[in-house]
Amino acid sequence: ASRTSKDLAEQCIKVLELICTREAGAVFEAGGLNCVLSLISEHGRHVHKDTLHSAMTVVSRLCTKMEPHDHNLPSCVEALSALLTHDDPHVADGALRCFASLSDRFTRRGVDPAPLAEHGLVKELLTRLSNAAGSQPSVCTNTGTPGPTASTSTPETKSSASVSTIISLLSTLCRGSPSITYDLLRSELPDAIEKALKGDERCCLDTMRLVDLLLVLLFEGRKALTPGGTSAHALPRLRRMDSAGEKSHRQLIDCIRSKDTDALIDAIENGGIEVNFMDDVGQTLLNWASAFGTQEMVEFLCERGADVNKGQRSSSLHYAACFGRPAIAKVLLQHGANPDLRDEDGKTPLDKARERVDVGHREVQAILQSPGEWMMAVDSRGENDEPRGDPDMAPVYLRRLLPVLCNTFQATMLPSVRKSSLNLIKKMVHYIHPTLLVEACSPESTTYNLGTMLVEVIATVLDNEDDEEGHLVVLQIIEDLMTKARDIFLDHFARLGVFCKVAQLAAVTSSTPEPQAKAQDNEGEINSTCEDAKEILPGKAYHWKDWCICRGRDCLYIWSDAAALELSNGSNGWFRFILDGKLA
Image 1 (cartoon, rainbow, N blue to C red):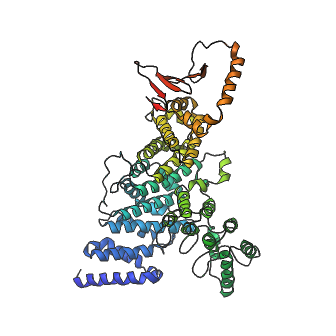
Image 2: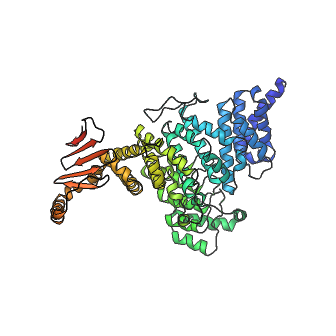
């Protein structure tokens, strides 16, 4: 092409970029999306890089106007899929953001986003997730050599934003499409997760957020993702109001701001206004209530069918996160709010919560880091007529990710990463079947040291006297382990002194010595006629004067209030003992 036509094309792109800031809808209706995509795909190497980036900005804005049933969607998806591997990182990341916008449109319309993955989107996402930690400082102190990445020169802030987009897009696809979820769980996803967990703090936390969703899908099933929003046939009711309606709506917003719950309930119940009406700026009553109203208002609107994911600029969960309202965020998640939707600026609710550091915003961060705890539908827990989740792949992910999360916990000193990994360990231990747990800890298994890893994590948390929240999580883990694999973990707990640490946590040493002495005296009276044991059976407790004796699988343990000894079956004379609280 001539230089004149090239200059003209570049000028047209600049004009379109300006127009799209205000009238993106008009450009989209005129067929601008396909034209600009063709320019990037066929002539991108011939135009200036700045023009190429402007063209990608135009595409990003126009993709927000694409509807799931648009006849141009297949060609648009094919072109964007090709751009994911573009040489220019700005173009490739822009294509990724376009897919995020498209997946949000599918989610808000209640349509399966499977058509978005027809040209290798999921495979590219897994590749990017695997390389996410390559250019970032690791949270771990003992990670291996980072993998290669195409964006090693990208600034860390851009890398973090890209990882967040990858995770949110994978989460949205899993939530909306059973077929994508099925294929993704049987892909190389565990490898990608393991590599991503070696990245920086944001990369680790975002990856753990994906694992949290996977656990819900693997063990609770899709029914646990409480469906939020209105059905397709109710969408036409989401229309603008007339002047009288707008006036009453503004009055109702004043009631929400003044926290007048009774006035809001009366207006809805008397039929004066519908719960899903939007005002002149595209905000619903639930949007306003999530930002300024009471928890009772939000619960009432959700129970009356308000669309928890609706909002022209942001969803209700965005407003709850922006204003640091943890109680509201929990209610919205319980009613099906999607924590991976993006607002008009491309930010998720978690991104909004991270913008401030006060107590309320930190609590919302913690909730959105593990939203699965609030998404599970209570009604689905009692159904036994059909298997929940994915029983074929659930054991695979437990075997693979449980040791990885234990290593991640031990290898980092970041409190946020430790807290998230510990919560995921607790969920996995809760979900794991007793038979699988025993098998994974057996000497013949490739994960034979899993028992030791779990107990080391428990001991590490118990050693931190100030971590009360961690103590509660660890006590739940201990309870599940003792219920499911008592014989195995009794040995591990004795070896690493977990019994003593739990006893100290319960303050039994200071509160029960006298009753214990009395109990021993009574026991002596009762058992005075009992015969001495002829052998020490494994897993059974024995007493001799002030000493307690227990045989484990590999060792004999002898302890009292003063000292503890571990005598190995295969010892050559050396043994371990604890004296004055020190191991030697």
